[in-house]
Length: 291
Ligand code: NAD
Image (cartoon, rainbow, N blue to C red; front, side):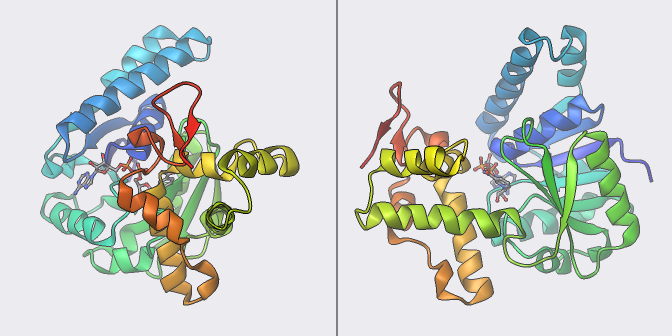
């Protein structure tokens, strides 16, 4: 079945980026979120990103107008029923994702493929709670979606080859590069990246270094384009904590213990750039370390 209409659930950082790249690759996009304000912000963000691409000569104005015209927004999950492919990119909570797939059930066409952009939750577990585990897989984009080249593809235990190859073709049409990861906690990128970020937070927690010195160390000493704390703020500290918890519980290994300071920041609601405050305070320019 050709994929032409893509339903995206969740219009946060990831969902809005996914909607943007899908629309630019000529897919019809239905972007759904429970928050009308979130949808409004997502469309404004997509338009601003595309304007930047136009001003840099990377996108023609008419192509931008057409791409924006291909994105429809809704707060009704049922409106995603006409989608050939669903990309679930809602909050990283297992219960939220189960509920979304459960509520989608009566609206979907039999051939619709379901995917989740989850960073860490078991694809097999999410698939098992749907009525179509063979048409379910992980489609894990990196942040920011329009810029990052990589997509991780994750088969659940029941994913069919037809589903896998249909989703591979989508990644190809987006002009991105796919790698295949087995369905184990946090897949490949986050399995390696998150313990490094968590360790940087332990280094801060134990007073080994300041926020600025930790970030400088990894930028200038290991050639990372962003420091680990800056990157954690960019990803969202709530997302980082969820991934560490999944690694800790999923692999039952104490080496993945989330740093108590990370827990504290999430408790405070200081979850990074998206709220204006995390390890840095972004409400002033340049951002100021919060410890
Ligand atoms: P976010 O907090 O920016 O956005 C989540 C959105 O989901 C919000 O707009 C929220 O209103 C919406 N939402 C919550 N419950 C919903 C529901 N029942 N129905 C519809 N929408 C709902 O989070 P994000 O960073 O965009 O992450 C989304 C997903 O992408 C998570 O699974 C996360 O693990 C994954 N992911 C995140 C990153 C990253 O760097 N942030 C990278 C790759 C994958």
